Image 1 (cartoon, one colour):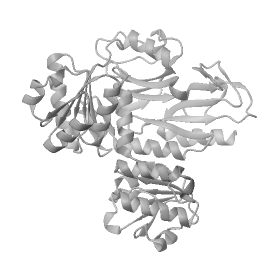
Image 2 (cartoon, one colour):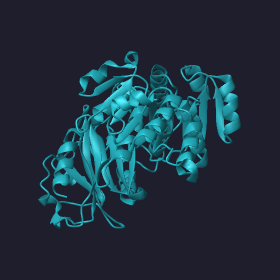
Image 3 (cartoon, one colour):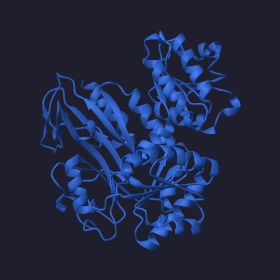
Image 4 (cartoon, rainbow, N blue to C red):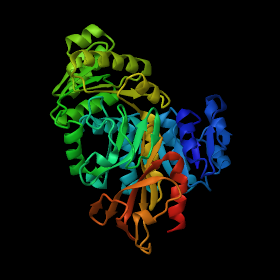
Length: 450
């Protein structure tokens, strides 16, 4: 694997793959972040748009080439050059929406003559999609869809007045076809058992059929509180794209943007969204526009410090009105996500995490791969396709080498939420939740038994 970009994103990609791959990073020495030195990777000083630099890095032997510098143009040229010199799967990070559209057309065009990029990653689009999934499921902290949306992973926080507080899981009477696969408690993620007692402020990860999770939410998490009003702070590309999607859902949407010229542009692009020219840190403005009355507030400026301040201000307003349900904040640096949530932000989402999830999804093997990452990388959702010759056994007979829960079994068009006595057979797809440190062990177990 070759990574063009010795920045924070490049370092995060290297951290995910260096244990199982020979990795070479290309960039100028001055751009190299210190965290790269933690990993056993090669480094080539130069520019990956240069043919000789690519050859020095071993492009002809590489199977994956990822360009993630801060320059769209450099990333594009490097990926196209790498495609000409070798057979690596190419992945290109872009920040300009126009480039993404153009490159996707080029890939699908008949005339490309092999001159295309395999995967174009626009992190802000992925971030927008993730925020939208969370908004549309009331009170959920995270939402992941599987099997075409027929099955889901949902994360909820147990409030102080919940009937679940101090109850063992086995006596909670959760709906059929739902299962708890993980609990986040005091910044630690673990896989529970039936005897586990639920605590106030626990974040519970459920898997199940979509309809059954709707019943679960209505019974325990007040799903009847449908989202109707959304406030967005920040009218950049994420804010605009999110507002357009919410308009399509007929939700009442407000967007606060500081730049007057950008506000005029937003007004031209949006039909039913109230565009407010102002500063999201202005408490008087937030009060005047009833931002604290919103069901969801999303702060998506391009500045982490401002997003944190805006989020904490609207949290304070929400407590005063007892009405603001959730505050979602964008973080540019992945390391800030846990800090944001620790000081009171309900949900902190990183563009980097969204992009890394996309990389893992696109690069996973056809039979064993990672579908999703939860809680800032502490947990993973694996997809395992059992070979046709796999011997039929019950789940409790699997004897996994590390702790994990089979949350979903997909058998042709049928979706099964299993228990220990459920039989699994060749051709089944298993969706397994486990802790991140267990992923390599579980993957190797299934590779050995394939």
